[in-house]
Image 1 (cartoon, one colour):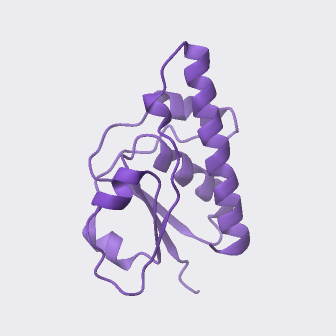
Image 2: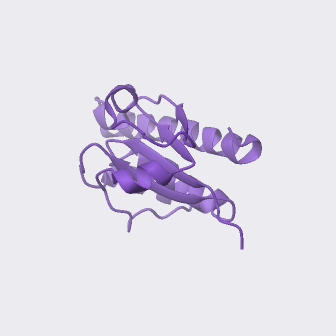
Image 3: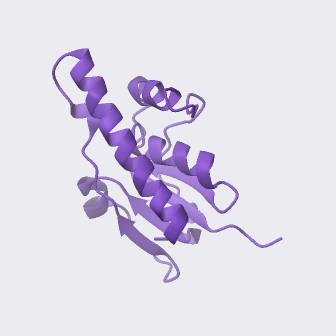
Amino acid sequence: MQKKPLVYFRTGNSCRSQIADGFLKALGSDKYEVRSAGLEAHGLNPRAVQVMNETGVDISKNTSDVIDPDILNRADYVITLCGHADEHCPVISSKNVTKWHWGFDDPAKATGTEEEIMGQFRTVRDSIKGRIEQFIREGK
């Protein structure tokens, strides 16, 4: 059996990368091995869990992990989801890694009423889902 390409999402690992991880596992686990981690472990954002449940994707068992350099350097794709991660992530020593940056606003920083905050989470969730669907379709 041929090895599936490893996709490694990097950011704070509480929200956006968890959403991307959940969607790629739900929609493309037949094609890709999926991992996510961040510069620091911030815990799983409960609002991210809630908005993913609305789409039928359960990420409640996901964990917020710190980047593992060994996994990072054997990844086929490394995808950052916020500006800080793109600029400050550890150096990737493998020349076989394809690195992309998909910038999304951080819904965890949204302010306003609970309805407005959840609206921001849904907007980001839907944008990430669209980008994951494009990645599965086009491989980029």
